[in-house]
Amino acid sequence: MIISFFRFKLMNTFQFASDRISINQLQVAYREVEALHRVSCAVQAGRLTGIIGPNGAGKSTLLKAMLGLVPIQQGTVLYQDQPLWEQLDRVAYVPQRSQIDWRYPATVWDVVMMGRVPKTGWFQRFSTRSRRIASQALERVGMNRYRDRPIGQLSGGQQQRVFLARALVQEAEIFCFDEPFVGIDQKTQDIIFEIFHELTEQGKIVLVVNHDLGESIHHFDDVILLNREAIATGNRQQVMTKANLDYAYGGHVAFYSEAA
Image (cartoon, rainbow, N blue to C red; front, top):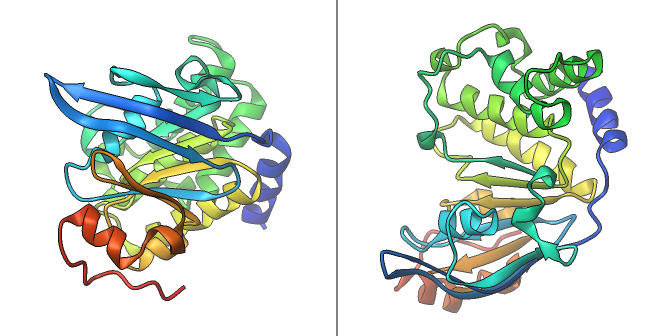
């Protein structure tokens, strides 16, 4: 009953994102070594989009460049005809777990409430509504009973659920996740995908960096197949062909099967 109530609240609280993110000729280099070469693609609202590619392909770099977290050499990233990095109040971003200091003395509740700061402002008292939204988000990801536990005492899957809850309370239009399935249990993966699909049903933009070419790929509607350049983009079935995968991964890819 609580889960269905939270889903109702999500659909009535969030604004529907009617646009797409347009990436045009995006180029990034680190110390003169090219990381992304003229990447052009679009991320559609209402569709779960995965960024797929081999190690070192620039998947995380693409996500960070879109959000203005790394400098770009050239190109544009537009949302509703304006640079996306000028609209970060519309974005919920969850980085890789390896980039988070889990020794930081914060509880589960503290972390989730941080997601409400853009709405309330720093050093402001959280409203009853903000606390209710946070409780509902924790209940949705199955972490409400751990609200007083330090984040460093959680398992990898539990930590990922907490940061998913923090993303939900931001009431964003765009959700970006960097490798959310690394080091987590199957139950957590199932919960995450359920919520991703709920968000896309509400017309949200959901963009996910994913390293796995197994069964989880079938959850994605669209794929950006990347190896420093966009090999192919669009509908999953059309992108994830043997020829495209062999080209992106530099050889035969035997561990992916398009069965869905």
